[in-house]
Length: 73
Image 1: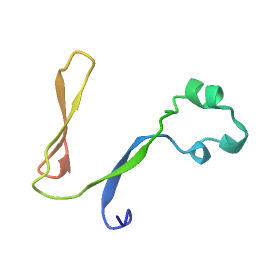
Image 2: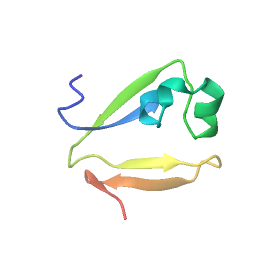
Image 3: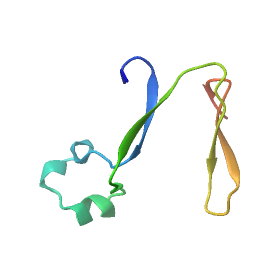
């Protein structure tokens, strides 16, 4: 995938370089700052007017994230 071809959301492992001095932080320090630890990192490409995306909370309730390729209100 060319991740510069469209917008994307990354799922899984965070990049430590996104944190100030991230290369000096331990895994626990990154987690304390909200960073995710995972065995995978997947770039999920988005960018079509046919895309509807919902986020699900722990109870399974859906919240619209995108509608018709645009960010939901």
